[in-house]
Image 1: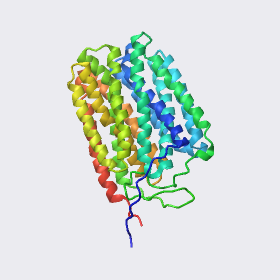
Image 2: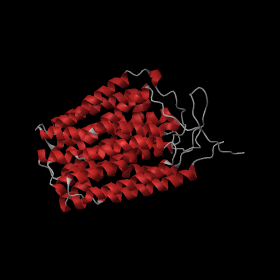
Image 3: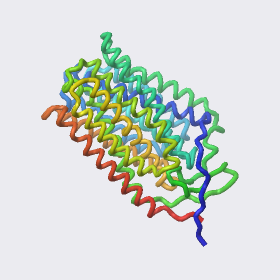
Image 4: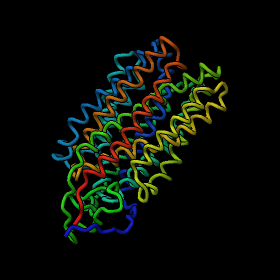
Length: 417
């Protein structure tokens, strides 16, 4: 007779392996939150239109698709740690090319290299955390993204300060290379014995809510792989796409919107983006523990709703202070989007975490490639204010996908015996 058993609430264990992988998120967070707000400044430096500047997102998409193709094979052939360390070195090389490039083809090529290295780095780290922590995966992935956002909070401030003293945006973005190389060194120094010891191959991640199997040490108990939730996975991929599109469209062009609507200077407008990252940082440390007790799919849908509310404040703002408040509120929604969506997707994969992460990387690449470019192209035609109407549309799509994926998840997951 089939019965359901209630497992104890999972706990997040922050061991050496976990903390080392957090370095990937610190590196990526600094890159995103220092470079994305710098795109309008890069456009000014090189004499580019908004649409041309938005092509840097398209270049990142190309790199993401390439990364999705090579990551599973690289992890299988080299092992997770060597693949991760190599990706960090590649990312650092791309950053060096980006900050020394003086023409659009060079900076676009640099972003392809950056995106390949960065996406292999993040994909390897997220799948590693999911496998390592089992039922606590959503908390681990969310906290990792929170740490990255917390450090990334300094990125827009660093750009604003560098611009204010006349150095331009490049020194702040160049810090990414140092962080990447430091992470590579720490990963290489991990002994092989530190590779996941708490996970059970194929065990469901924590988003298999309270009815999931409690996974102990590998040699203590064998847990059968959970069946893959196919329809739920498709919805969660769409949620990942919407989450990344909303975040990147905003971080690329929010500073331009603030300049257009409030007449703020370039340094101040860029620095206001830190409000978005501050909100994202705070909520990631809150929503991680919540995801262990409440439905992550419903939390994700609610977060998309908060994002729309923050967008409304930002969109109607006519002073930098109000715009900053809107960005903070939006960040309280944005911060939960990606970590919850990716944790749900990895949990629905039934143990095939690297393959699921590859699909998420492709979806993210499409989002990064299309959203900033389309919003930039629209801004060239109708202004940043009207173009920003794209953001709430994307958020609604994400909220619907989260709810639909949650319903499909409840239908598809197998009963546990």
